[in-house]
Image (cartoon, rainbow, N blue to C red; front, side):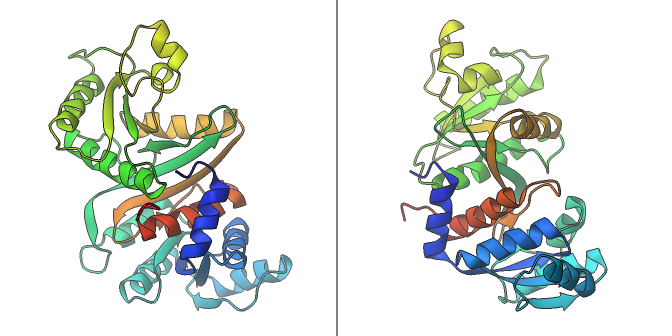
Length: 303
């Protein structure tokens, strides 16, 4: 099983290079991450965006001047053209550049010109802190504002696909809530109980679902033991399913900024994974995301 980003990059090298269509590529960190991915043999790139600005960044940072550049100053059109490159088979993956997430998602979801969608789109973050020896897969922190029970089934399925791509045959999925007991007044706990039932009945497959869990007893065996929680997921969660976008976004960024962490982020549920991190994310986080998307596009490392 893969448990470091170094391993993800090594596996991606063996799979790649995959061609990435970078939408609104006129961003220094984006271009540096693409450069590293190309140097590692993980990816090739087609850059869509303001050609003048892209070339200026390339010159200032002494980057590779051989990239194919599609000159498109309008960010909406740049996203549409990135989608079209994937639809036409000229690129395998889409990467978000310096553009709002909502803009690129609108292009991807367009009923006439967008990508084929397999269920619900959801963001999947993969994070590794120096305190734990495993990845934490967090969803959803960027897409679904107030997911329904049905939405959460898709969110779990998308996250589990990422876990499988990392070689985790049966990831432990914790449905996060503010308390550990079902309370009819707290919808997230009601959803948690239903998701566990669906897992037990084989509706949700390829994982072990537990909940409701508070964050502490989902990730800490000591906390789970202290509260007397006996469950195969308790304290050992690989996947953290948050109740809504607000909680997911805060959790994702809190881990990033309050600890020593490496991270990656992709959108799942489309024809191929979409490389998507915050515009403020580091070069390494963007490189990790490219490598993760390449790995996911292959399927499981066990295949």
